[in-house]
Length: 151
Image 1 (tube, rainbow, N blue to C red):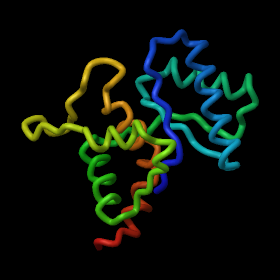
Image 2 (tube, rainbow, N blue to C red):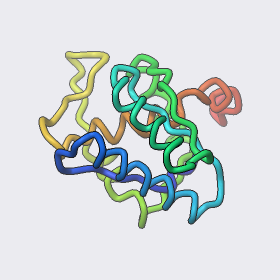
Image 3 (tube, helix red, strand yellow):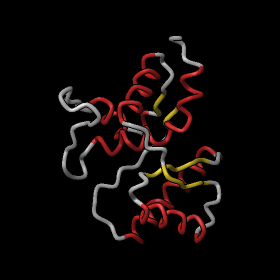
Image 4 (cartoon, rainbow, N blue to C red):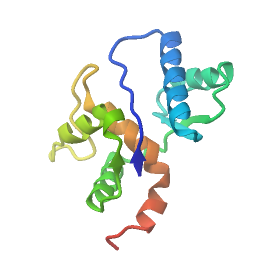
């Protein structure tokens, strides 16, 4: 797994502004890597997903597919990422993913509350970045674990 680029929006935006930020991000990724890619969103965010789908049509971003994330239980997502890290199977483009690196380094887990990470209220919440990273790979979990180095 390689995380190529992340973008963290740190201000309140209108839906139109957010769609524009999404468009710019997609164009940057495609311009640099020349690959189609998927965007997976929290299924509770239907307005966000619909806005992104509309932005794809309006701006001809057909190299990008937006859909609901599988949204597996958090313990499964954390296990997947931990296992991939443990096997050296996650790479992160440091110059493009500083917020993701920070999120992995600062995530807080409360053993008394299994199934949740501790949120920090506001735009500095690393949990959102972790969720986004996990949503982007969880649909491949079965394949990734099938070829695990630890089995």
